[in-house]
Structure formats: structure tokens, C-alpha cells
Length: 221
Image: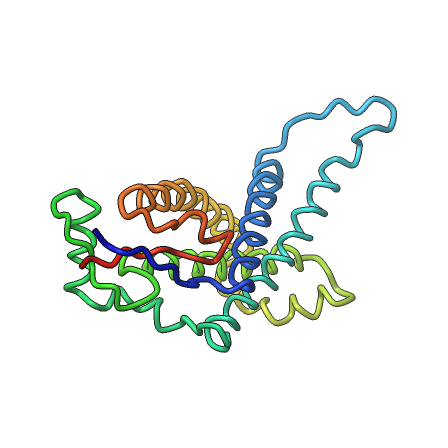
């Protein structure tokens, strides 16, 4: 019978960033869906006549919040005093470990991958892909937000990203922004399912660790 030991896996900053980013993404999905495919709101005399404007305001607000959360996450990846995890995003480069984890998830083998990084090979691919999508969503979102503005802070930011608009075209930028969010939407249920699956199989407290910061390991004697 093995002993169970606890280990601090996630810093307070990482946990705050995770949940704030999750909340922002949910708000952006809901407001973005309405902006992309609006439906009629009974307005009466005055009520809800600015509904689209209000939805767009909240979408832009949480888009800016997401941009700052993304920058914060990059900072933590390189400069966190608890654990700078940028190298862990390259765990997928270990081909042997990657195949071992794929076999485990396909229920072909019960042998887990070696714990050489904070993330497993497939997790590193998934999380790296998610951050890449968020970066592109923020970039295309800034272009869409700035289009038509010629004054204020928004216009200054727009000047920085306008070369990408000139390269792709505004219609393509909007299409990419929409498609990338669907990529995030597809990521979420898989991420949640795999977190619970891993928790059930290995009983390490994976799900609760993003609240407590602690995971549990069983040592075999």
C-alpha cells in the first residue's frame, strides 16, 4: 500500500489567471455569438433599443480583459517565481512520451507517460494551441475594434495591427475571428472531460487542484 503525498502544483497567480480567462471566454462566446447572428429584441418605446450596442460594449470590454490576461499568462510562463513553465509547453517534443500518452488515452495501454514536465505531451500541445488561438483572437479582435476609429487610444492600437488587416482584408479578419472562437468552443468540453477523466483514473485531485493548487501522488512501496 502506497503513501499519499501532496504537492503544490499551481500558484495563486496561475489559478486566478485560469478562472478569469475562463470567465472572460464564456462572456465573449455569448456576446460574440449574438454579434455574429443577432436576433430581434422587442424594443417597445425605449427598452432594449441599444441592445446590440450594449452587447458590443461588453464584448469589447471582456476582449480587452482577455488581452491583458493573455499578456499576464505569458509573463508567468517566463518570470513566475513559483514555476516558470514555458519549457513545459514543449513536452510534446518527447516523441516516446507522446506515443505513450496517446496509447493511454486510447485505452490501448495502462502505462502513463513519464512525468518529465508539468504538462503531459498532449496537454502541452493542447494548451499551446489554446494560447495560440487566444493570441490570434485578440489580434483579430483588436483589428475589428479599431476599424473606423481615427481618434483616441483605440486608433493608436489600430495603427499597430492595421498591417495585418491590409494583408488579410477586413472580411477575412472577421472570418478568422469567428472560426478561432469555434476552435476554443471545441477545446472547452474536451479539456473539462479529460480533466475529470484524469482525476477518476489517477485520483490525483486534478480538478480540485485548480482551486486549491495542490495535487496528490501515491508512492508505491
